[in-house]
Image 1 (cartoon, rainbow, N blue to C red):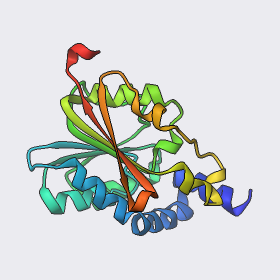
Image 2 (cartoon, one colour):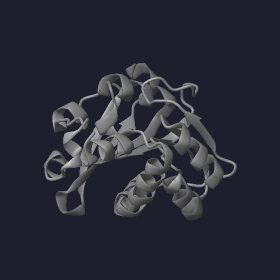
Image 3 (cartoon, helix red, strand yellow):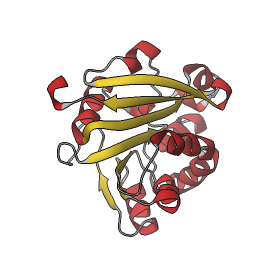
Image 4 (cartoon, rainbow, N blue to C red):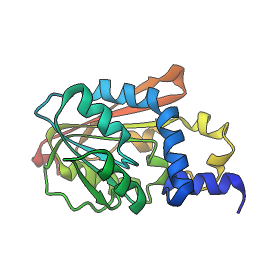
Amino acid sequence: MSLNAYIARQLGSPAGLGGKLVASVMNRQNRPLYDETIRLLSLSASDSVLDIGCGNGYALRLLERQCGGRFSGIDPSVSMVRAASRRNKGMTFVCEGASAMSFADGAFDKAFSINTVYFWDDLRKTMAEIRRVLKPGGLFVNTFYTNETLDRLSHTQFGYKRYTTEELSNHAGFSAKAVPILNGAACCFVYQRQGWESL
């Protein structure tokens, strides 16, 4: 396996020593994305919040320090869920994917995902599941690097899915708005969940 393929695999599902190193690097490089996502979530201390693809829980720790709230995270990596649980006492972490979550309908006021959409097996199924676990009126912020940015990076040629703006915009039960960030290198899609009747 080439180095770039290894890096891509670790970014998709970090594991072992390599996963720990990748997670640490991701936290530093993604900090501007975390800050923009937190701003767009407009959190209050009463919100219940889900981090989809939480890694080692770094972003949730930032959120807790800034505004409080009730926080949960999911990640397909066992080692990342363990690390997140150690880092963030009192939060709930589950090792699972986003397309079939164990949470109840309407469990969260807000949800977010940073740099994980590339690794979703089924965009429509995952968006439907996110809609299910959000309360009516709830927000989901999906933050990621644009296809143009991904195309300039060597490791993203291995296992990274690319979606068009149309594919990201049109999902039943959501209204969506694209917010370019980092001078257009990345984007936040802000989705608002419509009422139960929209299902």
